Amino acid sequence: MRQLLVVGNWKMNGSRASINTLLGDLVSAPAIAGPEVAVCPAYVHLPQVLELCAVSAIGVGAQDCSHMQSGAYTGEVAAPMLAELGCRWVILGHSERRQYHSESDELVAAKVAVAVAAGLQPIVCVGETREQREAGEAEQVVSAQLEGALRGQVSLDSLVVAYEPVWAIGTGLTATPQQAQDMHECIRSCLEGIAGVDADATRVLYGGSVKADNAAQLFAQPDIDGALVGGAALKAADFLAIISAAAA
Ligand code: 13P
Image (tube, rainbow, N blue to C red; front, side, top):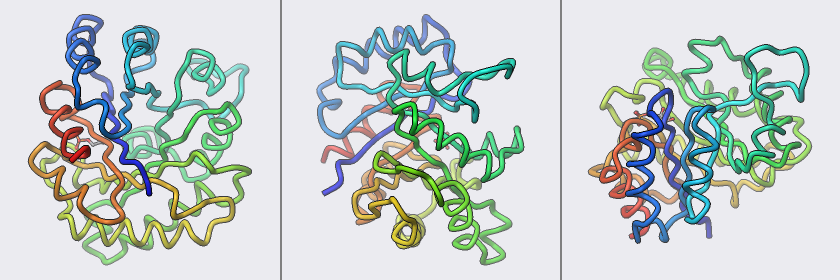
């Protein structure tokens, strides 16, 4: 039985003041005790968030890490630095990284390797564009992204996959529960063919305009094991409603 996981990806949002307010409302909420919950703020907010979450069950993660262990990589943050700080999770291969920073599957694979070696749990994002879906290529694209990021990794016990169709991110368009379930089933069968992955135990999250009013239907699907939430994670009431749907 896979425990549901709800992760808030705050992207490049928030200030010290807004985070105090948001986490003030989240850490004491009873709903937090239901599924596993984590938040991923911008790097600079990690120490503050780790301190505020220390007294709660909310885990903390970063939104990215370098593909290198250490060295002359100006502007980068290494996985061991995140682990030392107390992060448990790291989002890798988000479509916004792929789109705005030209991240390839090879780069994502290198990041997965350093993250796992540092003891972080990678949340590896995959997803097709609208054009790819319309061309009937969605499953092929997502399977290739998974293979590219995961094949040949030494250890993937802690892996989480997030299916985020690019056309559903921040658009208000959500994959229907059936579209999402179909892709999650495809992801799980692809994981079965990758050495080192326990496909049955690996949580596959859905992301892309998850809201309070569509979360329950998504979580009711057999292969959807939680959500990676963007916009709705920035308001305590909205995020808590999604967490409650996962606890039901
Ligand atoms: P939205 O929930 O804002 O669509 O963002 C999804 C996402 O990209 C989470 O990583």
